[in-house]
Image (tube, rainbow, N blue to C red; front, side, top):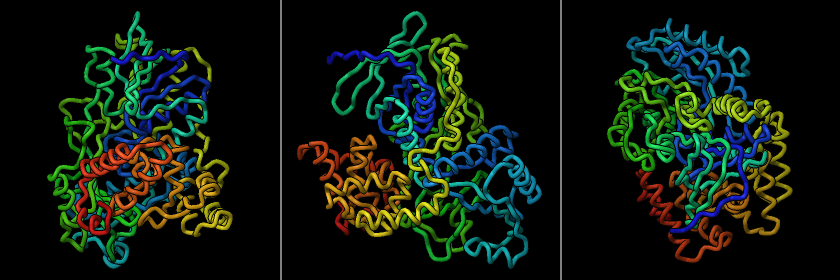
Length: 554
């Protein structure tokens, strides 16, 4: 049995979990001057955060459940993200068609939209508007079936094109503020003494080494794994999590398809159904079913695929969509509170910051239950206030008007992108579309990627079959963005979900670069290649493997 080394540092706060809530809390507390340790067993955004519908939204449907404060909070945070991360969060027009058969009548939808506008009184996005009349509706929504269509309302929410990058930039901001971030490290033991959780034992999953860390307070922000973390603390904690699975399909865009996002009432069960343009695809989702399976191996069931295809075929005029047209599917578990007896759609989406001291538990343990991508910052602020109160530390939140690293110094991202892309293309000898693509992903940090090509000019070359991705991005992910393996690089740093072959065409070249940088021997390199292939197959069930294999991608 390998003995654990004990760190000489006592951290004010240890955060368990590197999803959007965990890194947001780390950023908040580090900026308040506390010493922060974050432990993530896999990688940042490797579970729920990376498996969302990619929407930054106010939660229009929550108005039905009278959760006005939740909607207001989300709408305020949507505006904050537009300001603090304009390279990663963009406005998205949403169209809601209202049919004669719709459960929610036009007056109900109209009232909801008026209220939504009122609750977002400080927004920079356009107000909603309505479209009436058969001919106008046909021109506005040519791809949609028109039989029974009475009207539509159009409004704006936002889209996080790459939620994994959003999570990463919050993590980078936390690190810049002094937080120590350990991805690829699993919490394996806790020590309780006199009602306080004061020591954590952590396993480095790459090396097998163990480390003990002394802590003053622990925030359990492990998302869907909250109950598993509590199980390491003791066996007398009641169940906190009652997650539901949301699955999505990716299909190629087609001529005459929707140009804006469609938000429709599902014909089968009345729940929200989305068809969202995303790069060269349509993102179709989602489901909402209770899940008690393996939290590390989540994927869409065949029944969910059938459900989503049925809705797609029912609502789009083109129809005839089949499984063979699905490029891949993905699923995530919403970290919702355990509320037995409630329907999945009725479980609250409001987060809970659970102070165990108030319920007979350890005095210095807080668990985060729930939380949304949109409102991670306000959740972190609320948690930060509680932590500071418990530690008797006087400091206020500093994140509301703090740009993420890729937006530092950027006032108008569109103008910045246009002028900066020309400068970078000329300065580093890359094509203009490549410079623009780098700015879209890295924002103001794009030049740091290109600086690597001064010593290694060959890193300006494109990764195999990736027209807008260069080799320097792989090196940058390893050197500057905490990437440890191929999945970290291709899926969560370079966004290969945008590629119809899910990064398989770039796999060998990525492995070569990482082998050089990390000193992998041949067998380790091959192991990582196979791990990536297995990850893609198990989580995304790609349905075009033969086409990719024909192009030489394995």
